[in-house]
Structures are given as structure tokens and as C-alpha cells.
Amino acid sequence: MNRILRAGAAGLALAAMGSLGACGGGDPGSADASGQKADTIQMAIASAVIGPKEEVATFSVAKEEGFLAEENLTVKTINTDGSVAAVQAVASGSADITPADTSAVLAAREKGVPVVAVGGLVQNWPWRIATAPGSAITSAGDLKGKKIGVISLASGSAPFARSFVEDAGLDPEKDVDLVPVGVGSQALSALEGGKVDALALYTQAYTTIELTGKKFAYLENGARFDGIRSLSYVVREDTLAKKKDAITRFLRASYKGLLFSAVNPEAAMRDGYAVFPAILSGQKADDRIKNDTEILRTWVASATPREGEPASFGSWGAISDQEWGKTADYLKAAGQITKAPDLKAVWNDSLLEDANDFDAAAVIGKAGATTD
Image (cartoon, rainbow, N blue to C red):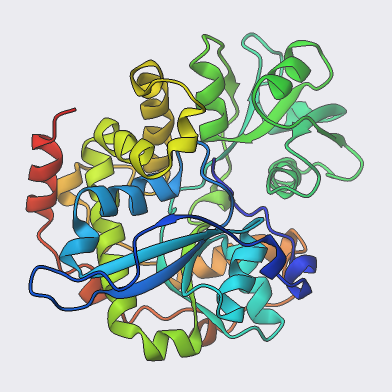
């Protein structure tokens, strides 16, 4: 699932080492066809991969489709307990890179942790407010005096719900009640049973429920949410200096994987099963592939341009100063950071030109030619 802006700044001081566990990756020291030893990158994953999400669309595809091999890279992975722990693993040297929430990255930087974002990943705001079809609630203003179901009060859905009603001139502390309802069937039951009047979830969570035949009515997000960034690739400053070339090649392989996933999410999902078999939960791939592909397609939509065909997608990983500003403003309002970040310290886009230097048509052709 998407872990968008769920990390709280308070956990940054906690050691992440106790939460680390091996979950996959290649064999260190492997060589390419020329006999040259492959560079090894250690990637921290913010939560175990038990469903279609970012590691499937990027890492699994890059590994199974040969993009990592093309870059002469071996990637090993470790699990951590959320974005804060993933950033801490990078900061401690336990991992070289992680796709983490900007909330965790900016909060860490504010505390003096020497981490830096080197490439964006999720670029479209995925959180939505939903009601039951036919509900009298059709706008943010209608939520006055209502209960909104959030994943938990510590999740990113809580600050999103507060910001959403603030846009309508409501007081989020007085005019609405936030009720923890989790995700999936638990959240659906809370809405259908009247425990809450609306839900604040991310698009993948809604897609998972809708695939069971249920429907939602969605409220329109305000303009303040356009351009807010979430998952981005993060490294430690000295790791960037020491492994600049390898990190660049890792980004290039990841963005190739993302492009492949945009063209052929079903093939990407099957790559995910191969690398992270726990996703199947003991079931057959053919029994899950249809629904899992739709869930992955929803995630990919959050990480690719809203308009245009894959052949026109470019500038993978770019984040504008305006987007950083909107993201920081949102996080300040949510209480996750206290001041505007120093962009020169927190953002280094020097790798992106080379990370984008690949034959997109070849990747698209490979995805189109893939058969399952």
C-alpha cells in the first residue's frame, strides 16, 4: 500500500537496527558477462512487501526484466518499520537508499540527520475523502459535525482529513471528529455501519475495496493538494559522494522499471510475485493477478504523469522548487516540521540527467512484447 506522509517526526531519534530483517535481493559479488564484479546497493523497504506497491513497480521489475543487470548492479533489501525507520537505516549506514515519505526526510533533515533526497517517485497526491453513494455529503463544508474515518491518528490520513476540512473554512479540532478505522473491510464496515460519515484513505485502499464490488462517492480535493510530493529516493550525504555512479544506475534501473510497469502492469505484477512471493499468501498467481494488477495500476498512476502516453513521460524523478514549497507548507501545517527546509541541503537533483539517460522506446517495446 502507499505509505504517504505517515511518518511522525518523533520517531526519528529511535534506532532502526532492531527492526531490520532480510527480505530479498541478489547475491553480493555477482559478475556481469564480462566478468566485472557488480556493485551492490542495499535498499531499505519501509514495510514488508505483502501487496502491490512501489517495490513491485520499480525494484521487482528492474530485477526480473534485467534492468539491474544492464546497470551491473546487485540490490539487496531489508525491511524496516515505516518511513522513519527506513530513513534511519539509511542515516545509520545499514542501507544505501530508500524510497521514503518526504515527511520523514524533511523531519530528519530538520533534526540534523545528514540525508538527502536524490529523486522523486510518487508525484500525484493519492489521498481522497469518500462517502457512501447517495450520501448527502457532497462537499467539504457538508462535513461539519460529521465523523471522518482515518487509518489511525498517527497515519497520513489524519493530517489530510484536517487539511481537507480546513479548506472549507471548518475548524478541524471542533467541527469534525476523526475516528480510527484502519483500511479494507474494517474501514468499509465503519462507513456502511454508520460509525463514520466519510473515509480519508489513499487511492490504492479504495481500489482494493472497489474490486469487491463496492462503490464510493468522492469529494473533490482542493488546489492546495496539487503538487505535494510524497515518496522520494533518499540517501545519506556521504553515501552519495562515495557511490554516486552506483546510485545513479540504481535510479535509472528503477525508472526503467516504473516505465515498464506503466505500459504492462500485469507483467510487472508477475515480476512482483517472483521477487516477493509473500504477496501471494499461498494462493495461485492466476487467481490473484487480475485484482493485484488493478491495485498496482492505481499505484503506478500516482507515480506517473496524469496526462499523456508512456512514450511522452520524461524527466523521471524531477521535483520543482514550487512542489517542495507546497510539500513543506503542508507538513508545517500538519505539525510534522516546524520551518521551511533548506532545499540546497535536502534536495540534490544532480543525478537525474544521467538517471534519465536510457532508451525509453526500448523499455516500452520490451513491456509490450512481454507475454505471461
